[in-house]
Image (tube, rainbow, N blue to C red; front, top):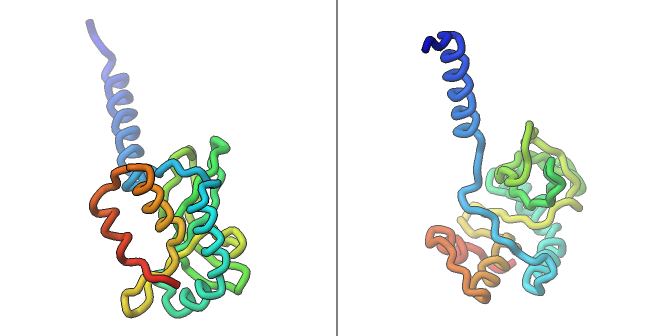
Amino acid sequence: MHIEPSIIVALVLGIAVWLFMRWRSPRPKYEPMAIDLDDPLMVDALAKAKDGMAQFLRLARTNKDSALVKLRFVSSSNQVEYLWAEVLEIISDQEIGVRLLTPPVTHSGELDRLYRCDTEDIEDWQVRDDKGKLYGGFSQRAMFAIARRDGIKLPRDLLKNEYEYRDV
């Protein structure tokens, strides 16, 4: 049986491209934890994040390189995800420029990671100041509490982050 060399080359190239795209495609370090947005701990956390928006803007202006926001994202499969993004610029009190850090799990196809978003679209935020104190991260703190309450074991290196947060 003779196999045409061009078919073998095409097959090898196809597999190589598929492997490269799979390797290159960003994946989150931890799979997202399923959280009920109506959970009282999460409701309280998101309210604290919204109430602290003025503090976020103040901290982000002086510590822009360590400012992050959590945005609501609707993927290509019409699933809602919440993605962390780094703050690139504070355009005004109502608009910021960001770069997505957390890759969406349910999205396929091209995705521009640079965005301009309204501050009203920010679900949560966190900023590390020049002394190393971490402010915000309300939804993250709620997830730690929910995991403890529900008996979910979190990775040790993730749990270390819990003690870096400071009260606002």
